[in-house]
Length: 281
Image (cartoon, rainbow, N blue to C red):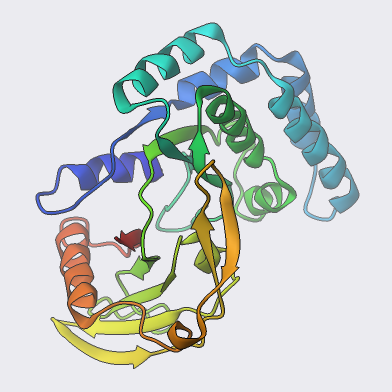
């Protein structure tokens, strides 16, 4: 079950705000591969590679990614995209997010292995970044991860989430267990100013909050010098944080406790550790 399915489940829970969007399905991804002999040929060669074949992995990764990025997306997919963009507003900003079928499994997580693109505006730009998301399933890092975890390159598929953007004051990652001890009674929240891209990419040291049973048990305030913000015309830009904010707590205590409540609602029914992206605006 990938990110798209998880977002669908979250959207059904009262009190949790999931932004509107839609998915380009894994079936579309399969059809594009089947209609592109070069990609099928390169995947067959890639299937013969082992972990030590780094030079060949680099070569085939580059060729597969280039092939995907040069693909003309089939007309039926473009028509479906146009219908949904008309409904949501083509001139709105969207996040174009990769969602692998093997993502967030109990035994392996593809989170962060594929690409996400933020603040993408206009049909042509969205189509271009859908192709980039497909291509990211075959980055060197992703291919190596497939090999390390025994995944067949032919059986890992990618859907692409096209989701309306918000422009948060702060964003972060919440894990429904202590990442170090694995204690599932503790919720761990990392947060930084601006878009979550700064945190996920390692650009900034985030604040870290630990919460247990409605009580904040630990707060670590980091020095945060950089943030990533959306540009009015599309795309994002790195920016220095104002000096008086660099050592300020990103989330209020109320926000921290609200997030813990969401984590409790979401994780209890499935008894699994979850990693939830979030934003405050």
